[in-house]
Image 1 (cartoon, rainbow, N blue to C red):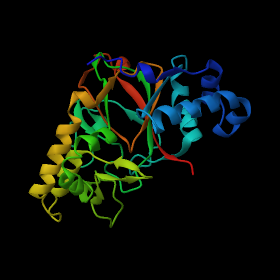
Image 2 (cartoon, rainbow, N blue to C red; image 1 turned 90 degrees about the horizontal axis):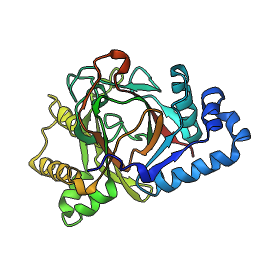
Image 3 (cartoon, rainbow, N blue to C red; image 1 turned 60 degrees about the vertical axis):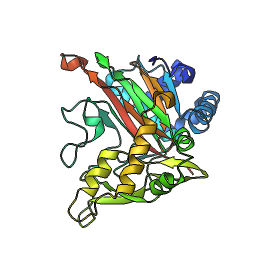
Image 4 (cartoon, rainbow, N blue to C red; image 1 turned 90 degrees about the vertical axis):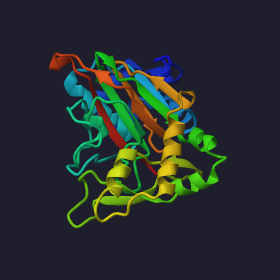
Length: 290
């Protein structure tokens, strides 16, 4: 599969707008960049909300390292409110290899590893409402690998349409492990369906290892054979290359994704030996403005 699958969904942002994102509060941008912001909002609706679920924006490569998180936060606030990504309240999280495996221990996350596969949605460990969008701003790419893989939930539902029993099971609650984010006195899992109705469209929240970890807890019932069969069928569908869009983000690109519409993952990557060159992206979670 080619690694330039994002090409139809790439735009280049105006240099002045990128500079403004790094230096001005979101509330001031509308007064100075109305036309550019209107065009950006139109692209987001067309590509993210109504289309493939992704929009990639070039133009951030000239920013200083210290300006990157600010620009990402400002861009995200143009769309809605930033959501904390863990119990410590991080609004902007570094996505990099922290030397862990996916689902290892009780608190590690997919984004802390270099391994691939395990297509999922962000916030799978969190109760509803999960973020409508997530963003990634690429500062540095890996030496090798690290391409993003996207599968739209509408294609998955179509693929499983002749198996209504499996779809019905996926619309019933599972226990997702909270990965240590539960508050004192709260249960260590959250119960929610994998597939759900989202404003009249199919929605999805998923990371199988978090479901398996949740149902492995002593006070949680084991997965039933029916549930395992439904998850197996889902995994088989999302592993089909025919349903996948694959692309590699370049340094200086910011992408926004429809988190409730897309299952995403990446190919395993090999990093540079120099710590100053290792793969680094910044991420936000966004709740859409009313």
